[in-house]
Image 1: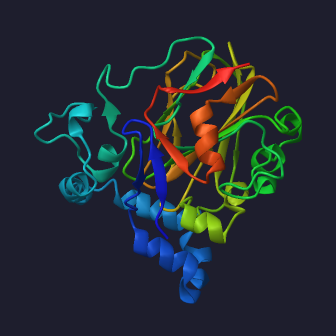
Image 2 (image 1 turned 120 degrees about the vertical axis):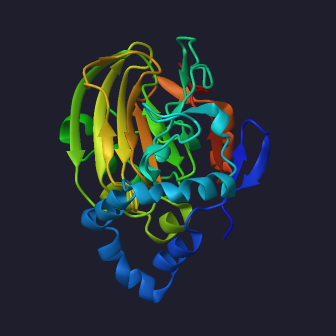
Image 3 (image 1 turned 45 degrees about the vertical axis):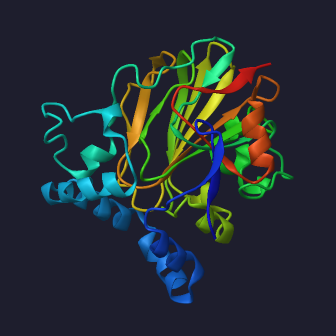
Length: 299
């Protein structure tokens, strides 16, 4: 099963080069792999693997990773206190690398929402039980994702953006608009892969995986439920701000090693995703969008 996505920059369909492709297929397709899922997708195992990525020895993997996935390092700055000759002390420091100033301008038009992650997006104008891509809508409802009675009705059948970050991607996530934080809570769970291969076998992943939920009151898009989802071998979800007030484009946090997902839910009738994201989602295909480009518009 090839994973195809539409690249907004190249304006063409591309095939994803999956990190750990063989392991994911073994874990979710083979009988033996399925037996190991319960162990390998737990927080302790993923956390231990994440710790290994903090070791000095893990830095040896960086050059090969950059070459294999054709990462343009001209876009990034080194870890604090280091130079580009020896930029990162560990694989995790490389994994959470930052963009150089100006490399990813943030859309500033008030009525347009900028991409909060550099990722592969699915988009829905209204999340209902009839939605089928990437998984059935019942697994992506506000009730299933938020598991909090105070907020479930607020976001019921509203728009939804799902941003999947691959291990090769920039792994910091940002605020899509200025505003203030109304609530924050964590939902502890498993660390299943969020790869489409895994989702096809386990459609309930987004409602059982580890999640951090932040309820935002924004200036232009009403209330948003901003959900970070942990995945296989994600060491930790880090909130790098005080979760009080924020400006459009500010960094909110980052994921340590692993593939991961950010999901944003809105109030019904407040905004809708851009037409290209909706179109490709209806075709069953994600759209890769750079950080800061428009992904939705106010109604």
